[in-house]
Length: 455
Image 1 (tube, one colour):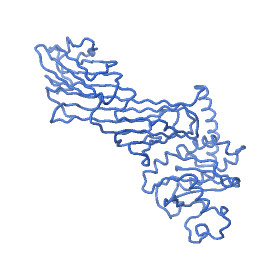
Image 2 (cartoon, rainbow, N blue to C red):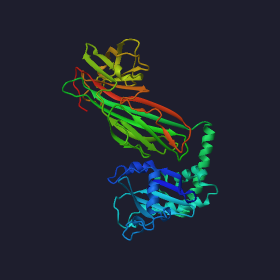
Image 3 (cartoon, rainbow, N blue to C red):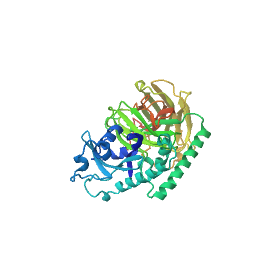
Image 4 (tube, rainbow, N blue to C red):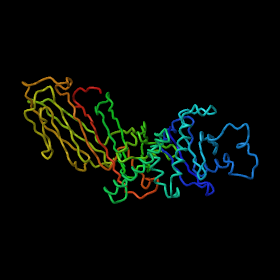
């Protein structure tokens, strides 16, 4: 069973709200169902609840159909609320001498009107509220001073809204464990950094593809991205942030701890909610379409008297405003025997052979800011030691070059973290670290003068 929201009201303070927790992971899971409707603000939910169902909320009206009619379909402790033409069902609650606890569970089925015992989520939610009410009775101080204890206990017994304790005995064990966890996590933070907690958000995008440079063969590219989050916040803290981009993002796949596409925000903006742990959290993965990667090129390989001559031209696109950390090009020449000698220009380039002497590797650790990089040279093989490999198509002048690259502080989709959009609950000061990068996994450029293999 998962909870979407938990509220606690103080009956001794005119039913005022003293604790509220929304589980955004559950909200993201609910958003995919047909019966989903956004939960209203706490104030609207509470006022509707008090007016409609709590007998002592209004003594001036002797008879209220929604409360007192024999035809009513809702009976305590399970109700429905109609707020701004949105039906919120089910809403469960229990009362004690001091508190009112209200919960909105996540339902696996949208059926309503049947025996609520048939829905296992409802009894589980009632049990959670009942055992949580017992916990409130054990608090020596006022609840308003126990906010972090409440969050820690909830994080332990219902992480991300998922109920893990099924009995009062287990709940009590979890409560003591939660308080111990809070103490240990506090010690951890104090011992590792006597500063504000740190939230690190990273956007990593990757492109792989094939460049044919032919009219009959269309170039193919696959653009993907992932958003990662790491924090040293207390374990019960919720984090939200906005990411914006100039391209259409498709195939958004939330991670285990939730990355949510929020349809209520502006176009080309992703709003994420999650409750991170201390490990790196994969918020979500995504795909996007782009006309071209930040690197393109032309590769020419021709036969010579002694072996092969090659020319590789790499082109960059200034409008993408990317600074490369490195570029690495691998030019394999199997099925021809080991390379006995090679020459190349310009001499400022860094080119070396692999151990098997069948590949030339051209590295540029810090490429200059330019629109083009070129290299050309010659290769001589020892044909007498030629041995077939697993690439039978790479014979004669049939060849390709594989390009890898990395760009820091830039993404190909222009996705970025919206400034000032990161918030946490419960509110606390934090330090934000934000990084982004684009990586070329493999861009394969085929020899424009030879034959190609369709991938």
